[in-house]
Image (cartoon, rainbow, N blue to C red; front, top):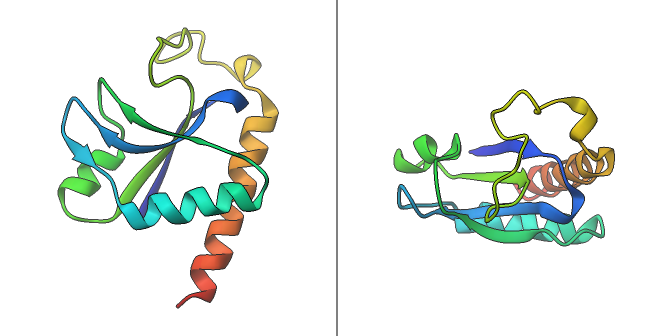
Length: 116
């Protein structure tokens, strides 16, 4: 299983990537569902988005039928000025976005580990 974390920057743009249009990847419905539940458990409401261009690191796993998903914190629709530019620096990160993702991932792992 892979939970890829990529470009977590903005609280209002936190999202679980369910598919990637350009390359046709549709990510694990189970991981998507469980991640969304974990975000709710930490009082956050991520968007569920399809990334229209490029490809996240989860694509290679999904193509090999390894359950995967990506969590982002930048717009999946509008260009983010920090994405792969010299503006990709710590000063442009909203610390709360990282805190929310961290807490959701901790909840996810605790629930996942207890379900086995």
